[in-house]
Structure formats: structure tokens, C-alpha cells
Image (tube, rainbow, N blue to C red; front, side, top):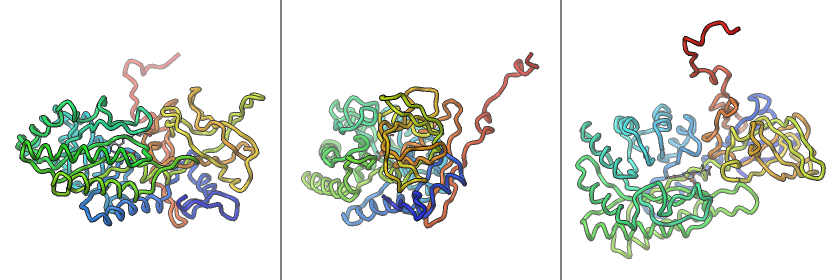
Length: 438
Ligand code: LLP
């Protein structure tokens, strides 16, 4: 997919760059991001929305992959940006992201985070709970500002996905519950808050979703709730944000819909359900993360050691693992991979790819068909662009990999590989431990 192909040397090439050369130049593990594919996905969402005739914003959910270069790319493509922490906000601002296009999410925004966002003049806060509502109103008041907000509602829609990444069901830590009346109370309080401007509603039903039905149901709930608020409180909302969660193809058998299909379904549902209640059509906002960057990422590893248990399994260990990709260990996620330096060779054996962390659960792929791998081969695991770098850790004091953007035969380093110095740079040795050790 994307710009990937096998070149005349039999090597995997991405963005016109030979991945074996990339591994040699930058070392492994290495995250390689296909810049053209990321841009193509951004444009697909923007174009699909343009053709709906609705006003819209597409906010890239930066939690999927957040670096300064990525923020700039997304800004160039005209998207908005969803941040969920002071760290993501800082990264975006530092990269020069236009603050009015930044939306701030999260179920426990701290006073420090709210202050930072108010001072920056971000476009919108997605308020999650009553504590935040009060705190934000008070803080905005102190600063003589009026903060634009959406209210996050839990629409009671459970997306069919892994438990940990499903969020729209009623028993969730996020948002104001519709059924119990909490959402109604929140709206009532919000319009009484002098320093808040209630723009509309937000919902997010989950992640890696392959159907449109959940989104349609969430839109319908939002439309009915908005109409009830109008009828009972006399307020009109101008924005409905349906969150992210659009699925991608990690492996054969995954059947995500094309971007256009999700957008058409959402826009169609908005037109239908809001018109049904004689409600002026709101702006539609979405927040894709995974579907912008997921398929654009490939992780390159060097094959190291082997262990064969005759008749049972052959393990091949690579120089990374759960520290750069915790998703298999966390969610039993499945990935596809190939030998980047022998991309034309037929599969000869079934192997399992182990990481190098001291933990049995550090397995990247079970039962992968590969040519007979040798020490020093380059293994390329595909679709690692989302929630890999952003969820990477230093477990076992393993250094986090570098990230390169590749495009038109050119590679740009956008995140440097961590050094040993980085690993100890925040460590301190108390005075009383600094004597000579015998
Ligand atoms: N908006 C909100 C409010 C979210 O909570 C999320 C993801 C998104 C948008 C973006 O969803 P996406 O389009 O990327 O599916 N670490 C997990 C995924 C957690 C998703 C959390 N929220 C994973 O690796 O699968």
C-alpha cells in the first residue's frame, strides 16, 4: 500500500527510499513513515467532507503519533489538531501549530493544562465532566476570556472492538452520560457559565471500527439530544463532533471502509437526523488518528538470535519489541511483516517474532510465513504508524528508536534515536550516595 514497492535489488522500498539503506544509515529499530500516504489520507478526509456541502473540521488525533514534524504536516494539510495533554499541546505550539485550530481533550485536564491552553488561545475545549466545567469557567473568568467548549457525551453506543479501546458505552470513564440526565445538567450549567461558550456536542465510540452503524447511532443520539436542549432550554448548538475510530487494515482479513464511506455515512446521518427535528444543520467535526498515520508506518528491525523448539516453534528475536510496539502485548494486535532485504524470496518456514525485552509477553508476531531468516536480515513490520512511537517506552532501559519521513526518494530524520545520555539525563544521585563505592 502507499508508496511501498519491491525494487530491482529485491529490497522493500518506501517513498522511493530503499529500506535496507535506511536501516544502514539510521540504525534499527527504525520507524519509517510514508509521508505521501499520510498526506493522501489527510486529503481524502478533507475532500470527502468538501463534497458533503456541510461545514466541517477534521482534527488529527495527535495521540496516534505526535512529533513536531507531524504537527507541521497536518497544519499544512489544513486539518485541526486534537491534543490530550500538556505534552501534546506543547509539541503542537512549539511546532507553530495555529492555536485556534487546536482542540483539547481528556477526562482529567489539570489546572496547569487548562491554563496553558487558555493562554495559548486554543480553539476549543472538549469538556468531559462537572469538575472541569466549573474549573474552566473560573479560570477563563480570571483571565477575562471566553472559552469555546464542546460537551463530551457518552452516547451509550458500544463499538465492536477491543474492550480497552471501546469508549462510547455508558459505563465508561469518559464524558457526560445521556441516559442518567448528566448530559442535560451539564448543558444547563454550561449555558449559565459566563466565561464559556457552548458550541456543541462531542462523542467518541471507540477505535479500529469497520462499520458505519455506530457512528450513525451516535449522530442520531446527538441530534435528538440537541433538539431536546433546544426545546427545553432554548439553546441552539452549532457543532457535532463524532470523534475518531475509523479502522485500518493491519492484516489480511481486516476490512476497513474507505475514508469516503465513513464521511458519507456521518454526513448523511447528520442531514437526516437533524432535519428530522427541524434543527439547523450543524458543523461536523471528526478526529481520526489511526487512519491518518497507521498504514503509513513501517518498523525496521535487525534479526538477531534464534531459538527452535523442535516440533513446537521457531522463535526469531529482533532488536526491538514491546518497547517500540506494545500493541500485541496490550491488545493482542496482529501485524504482518516481511524480510526487507529479501523481499522477493518465497516463504519457507513459519516463525514467531520475539522482542528483546525480558518478558515472555514480548512477542510481536506469532506464526509468520518468512523466507529462512538469517542473523542480520532486516525485518519490516507494516502498519506501525499509529500508537507505536506514541506508546513506546524505555522498559529495560531500551532506547526509543528514531523516526524518518520518506518521500520522493528523500529521507528526513524527524525524531532522533535516544542516546545513553538521554536515558540517564533525568536521573539524580543523592549527595549521600556519591562517596567512593568499595
Ligand atoms: N478522539 C478521541 C476522543 C479518542 O479518544 C481517540 C482515541 C481518537 C479520537 C482517535 O481514535 P483513532 O481514530 O485513532 O481510532 N492505544 C490504542 C488506541 C486508543 C485510542 C484512544 N482514543 C491502540 O493502540 O489501539
